[in-house]
Image (cartoon, rainbow, N blue to C red; front, side, top):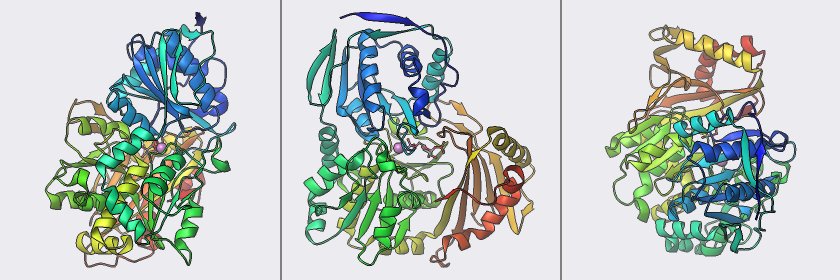
Amino acid sequence: MTFKTVRTSPIEGQKPGTSGLRKKTSVFRTPGYLENFVQSVFDGTGGAAGKTFVVGGDGRFYNSEAIGVIIRMAAANGAVRLIVGQNGILSTPAVSNLIRKFKTDGGIILSASHNPGGEDGDFGVKFNAPNGGPAPEKITDEIFARTQQITEYKIAEEDACDFDEPGRFRLGKTQIDVVDPVADYEALMQELFDFDAIRTLFANGFRICFDAMHAVTGPYAKRILEGALGAPAGSVINAVPSPNFGGGHPDPNPVWASELVGVMNGPDAPDFGAASDGDGDRNMIMGKRTFVTPSDSLALLTAYAHLTPAYSGKLSGVARSMPTSQAVDRVAERLGIPCFETPTGWKFFGNLLDAGKATLCGEESAGTGSNHIREKDGLWAVLLWLNILARDGRDIVQLQQDHWRSFGRNYYSRHDYEEIPTDIANTLMTALRERSDTLPGSMVEDMKVVEADDFSYRDPIDQSLTVGQGVRVRFDGGSRVVFRLSGTGTQGATLRVYLERFVGCSGDHNMNVREALSPVIQAAEALAQIRRHTGRTKADVIT
Ligand code: VG1
Ligand code: CO
């Protein structure tokens, strides 16, 4: 076994964003790009010598090559053991579970999640810490610092072992365990949920459509839903992972999951619809002709989780990202548990989960999860829903209507303006920030501002401070608009405008969402002057 040390120099722009380093696939394939970043991950976390890592990805184009490089680099850097998913496949939640179950020193996930894949698409690399969660900022800052100083990387000259069959292999002194990607994850789900109750639900004719969007959850959903739980064959659609996700955009929202939306709005709609994203950590939930917003889903799951074995005791607390609607806040209040508001990105939930301060967490971007791992978890959310429906007896549409009657409804939508030139997006945000102090008490269109700020977060566990997380403007009556720039895009800037309007228990809960939100949409335009800054008259993606 021979290892070589390759001279290299820093490559600009290797700064991890909301969720790891994401770039065009072509950028990742330039010589030394991946190697520089992986070496920086090792160096920025105290070196790989003597350590064990989990390695896997969502199967997108370049997944296997990248894993081969990581195996060779881990061996050259002295790692003792790697746990690699068969065929290089592991969903993000499955990686988190393996890190925790086998108490490894962390894991490397190859994915750009909901971004499209393929030669002309996106690729990404994310480091997860020993708690199973995305590396917190103090670690990603260290990794980034290393990318700016790097002078060499280490790699084995030999090829990596094949990883298309489970088994134990070696590269030099490094042991490589290729594992079935689904088995450990399925075992965890069985511990959490009442599989018998869900099996009975399906046996009694309950129908589901799960859209895996040609991404990583296909094999998981097939084995668990159709296999272990007995959902009829064909319940999982687009179940075979493909390197470019069948040419689609593996983002489970009503725009990109249009096939599922078609099924759920059709004449023979099943009782329950769901979709997951590229790397399996997101979930979209639907009932017959009904979309459940991720924010409402979090609120409903918080209200009904006690019906399931894993969450039958009192929840210690809930956490939501700042732009996520405030629907869950009122559920937490009624349950008498704390509700935390964190910056966007799952890494901010880690400390709360580790400290036992939150049991459930969620984001408006179709991310829901719990203390079972340290990532959001798409299929887990589906199983939690199924377990609740199996125990409660009502259908999901009725459950949601009853919930709104009891708690009120937060009408919610997100408008994304994509590929804005970065300087223009920054100018728009700076103008908003500068104005935010003067807004409270003023009228915007016919809405009265009660609070406005640029969100900053003091982590209650390690006291770390994160600033500049988005401008939020609250109006009289609980409505709200939030503006922030995306940290996962690979081209220009994406402006996200999060719109929310609260209608109390006795109000109208069945308005058209766009109409219900129209005063907030107008206020948002008046505040941010999107048209003036960008020339755009409408959002590119509305979810
Ligand atoms: C987006 C979402 C955020 C999510 C992140 C990673 O980030 O808004 O809620 O945590 O993607 O999700 P941004 O910075 O683009 O708004 V995933 O499924 O791509 O790991
Ligand atoms: Co994802």
